[in-house]
Image (cartoon, rainbow, N blue to C red):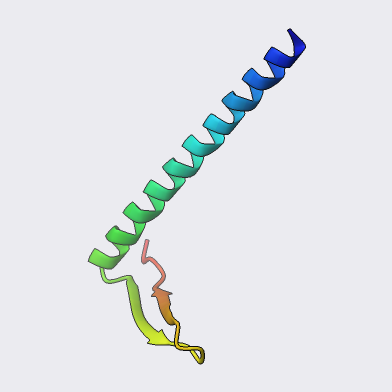
Length: 64
């Protein structure tokens, strides 16, 4: 019975951690889209010294 409780608790914990991460990611994407539409999010791409593509992101402060 103890092993069943441990496995059940582990599975439940993993599910809750995954769900929390998915919600945070969705909120972050939504915030980025809204900041881009309002002109607060500015970005440009460039190549670093190794030739890898990089992104430079600037976020202006909100006027609230």
